[in-house]
Length: 343
Image 1 (cartoon, rainbow, N blue to C red):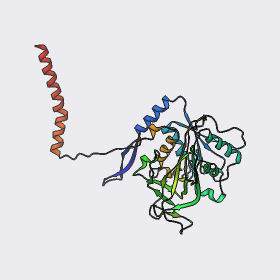
Image 2: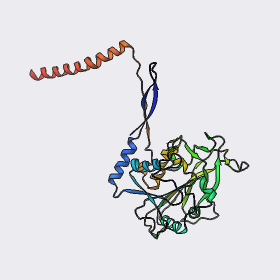
Image 3: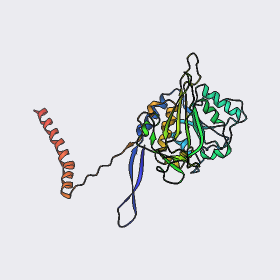
Image 4: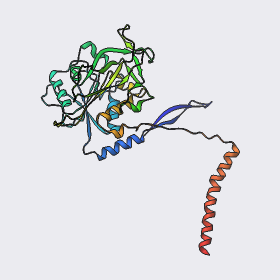
């Protein structure tokens, strides 16, 4: 329920450390627990496998998704399991509330793409995470499906000369007005070699077209990594898609929601603890699952530490007040009450 940091204590004799509380996680944890016990059935997140995706059972620092899976299960009460659609005629399971496609490296078979497309058409929820590693293998096929929903997945890697720590990262601090990123205003995401992900510009859009919103951006002087002569501007790095029910058409799962991000490595075991990456997971997943109670303003609460400096005489006075004065006052009051009742 509480996050701690280790701080060194000044000690001339030996190296000494103390644990200092910094954030209280209880409000979000208890809210998730209340939602879990009042829900008719547990929620389930399915992670697609078979194409080089990040593995939810891997503790590898750079590519494993074990912490991601633990975060969903332990802190959000969401069941997590791998899902293979290879060599099967079965669609995405009916109890799959969220489909996660995390960094596929190779092409997804046409039969699998049809199942994913059907899942989204029926009102499914999708978190699609791309990365640099799949560019060399060509398109995964998921790009075509996302284009139908108004999302453009670029093969260009974005670099930001002003917002970075190393040579391959981008610090994201610019966000739009959207429920996923509103709580992140004033915070930062730490992404690795992100691809540009944007809204597909079309000449005409139907009345029932999905709503596509670019929600996070690089800095204003960013450029494409392999094209230094590219236009320097802020590039979108993730989008959120939502499409309500069409009049006269009943979808099996409800409202379709999609989040597409140009990086998947920033949620791996090591990187998920950087900046506000962990908070982004919570916000994106709970928005996709339509749990506004866990999106709107419930996050870690900072713990403020107060120090009271007292002289020896002040300390002795405080001890007399707490150990003698206050108990004595209670005894005196009790004695007065006793005497009044006796009389």
